[in-house]
Image (cartoon, rainbow, N blue to C red; front, side, top):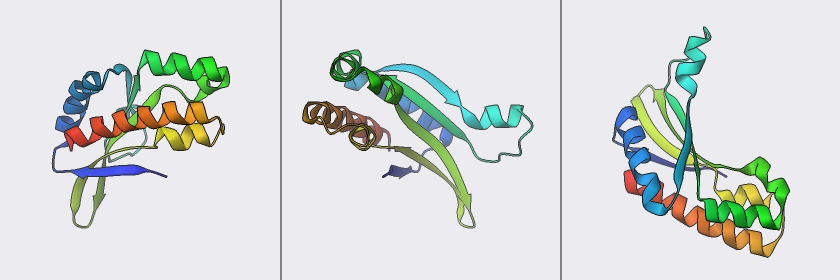
Length: 131
C-alpha cells in the first residue's frame, strides 16, 4: 500500500532535493505541509520531522477530472519526507501512497487507471532520483 525509500540524506537535504526534482517530471509543487513544525507549534511533543509535498501535473489532473469530477477529492498527488527514530538511530524516509492504489480504490475506470499509472511512474521517478 505504501511505497517507501530510505535515504542517507538528512531530512533537510531530502526536502530540498525533492523540491528541485518535482519540475523535472513536469509536476509543479503546490504546497508543503510541515506537519512536524505544525504539531510542535500547537504544543504537541512530536520529536520526528515530517513534510508532506503536494504536487500536480495540470494535464493529468484535467484528464482525471474530465473522467470523474469526484476524483478532485483525491488530488493533488502527495509525497512525504519524514524521519523515523529507533534504537539504531534516526533515518530519513521518502514515501507515497501510489496514485494507482488511491484512484483505483475509488473507480474501476480503465482510462483512469492508465492515467494513474503514468502519474505513478513519474512520481516514482521523482522519489528515486533523490534517494
